[in-house]
Structure formats: C-alpha cells, structure tokens
Length: 238
Ligand code: TMP
Ligand code: ASP
Image (tube, rainbow, N blue to C red; front, top):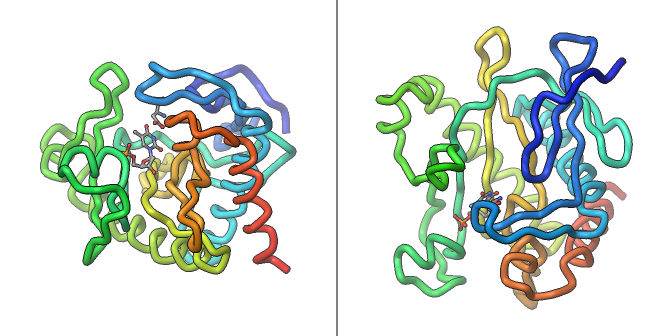
C-alpha cells in the first residue's frame, strides 16, 4: 500500500489518497480546536489515543453489524479507511443534557431525559454548523429520505452498543457526534471517528469529565483523561 498526496486537512486529521482508488489513509493529529476553531491547542498524544480508541469502537461496531469505513489501524496514528463521500451532516445523539443543549433549553447540565435525542447539524464551518432537522436535509439535497432513515437507525444502534460497552468501562455516554459517508456504490456507512473528541464521557461514580470538555473548559489533565478512557476500554478485551 503506497500513500499518495494529501487530499484534505481537517482540524484533527489529515486524509491521504493511496494507490488503491477505494482506500484512504487517515492521520490523527494532536491538534485540538473548540468553538468552531476559535480556541486552539494541542493535547499530548491525542492523535495516537484517538486513533486507537476510534479503531477499537469501529472494529467492535463492525462485528456487531454497524457497517463502517475502517479497514485497519495501521500504526500509532494512521488508519486505512474505505473511500467515502462524507454526508454533510453532524449526527448528534444525547442521553443526558449537556453542552449546547443545556444552553439552548436552559436546562442544568446532567439533567436526565426520558429518551435519547437525535439532532442534525449542517456541516459547514463558515455557517458554524447550524442545527437543522431531517426535512431541511432532504429539501436542500444533503441526503435522501431513505439515507436519513438509514442514518437514524444506525445512529441509534451505535448509541445502544456504545452505551453498553462504556457502561462496562464504568463510563456514562452523555452524548456524541457521528458522521456518515456514501461509498462509491451509494451505500451509507458510518465514517469519521468516535473518540473523546467527539463524545462526552463521564465517570459513572464521580461524574468526572473524561473527554474534550476538559480542553473546552480548561479543566486540566486533558491528555490524562484520554489515557484513562483508552485504559478502561482495553480492560474490556481481557
Ligand atoms: P454540543 O453539546 O456542543 O452540541 O456537542 C454535542 C456532542 O457532539 C459532544 O459530544 C461533542 C460533539 N461535537 C463534535 O464532535 N464536534 C463538534 O464540532 C461539536 C460542536 C460537537
Ligand atoms: N470541533 C469543533 C471545533 O473546532 C468544536 C468542538 O469540538 O467543540 O471547533
């Protein structure tokens, strides 16, 4: 496998073409941003940790019937993935009120809800990823009705599986963001990453935040939190 030119550089990852037209190489970076890039920093070893954590989730998800882009974790900070065209949606599931939902609805962080909430943001940095619903997405051609049905079903399935595994690691899955992609033959599969950058994870006993909120809110011990999550996941394999 030969890695060719860089195709795209995002806030936390770089994507490279390879000599196989159907495969991309993703490199995970230590860079971190928040509030649509307004806050910038680096988190020591984040790239390696997110590569491993996301690889762990995507492998398990595939084994449990959630089709996704992961081919293999290649080394510390690279993974080989299937070529997809990213659907311009951020799909968020919330199990407990936190973050922007707490702000928007004037609810206290940690408020329990009777069922999970799913929401969509239109992936456009210049617009600040505005909140939309499925009708906006369908009407402006971001995805078809059938694609949104698939995305929602897959997202809820990911929520069930992830919540269960994280519970076994004594972590609460508060909320998370997913992205989906279209394969060249038009199939919708889970893509991007699942990591403490894209999830809120709280310790079940102490409710200590073990995710990117430590960076967003300057809580300290950011890298330590990512290491803690990875250590707990690895223990589940034993
Ligand atoms: P929010 O409460 O800020 O809307 O975030 C909800 C979840 O989505 C949280 O787990 C963090 C994640 N997220 C991302 O992965 N990328 C983003 O750009 C944003 C805004 C949130
Ligand atoms: N990743 C987003 C950004 O840079 C926001 C976030 O995760 O808080 O701005």
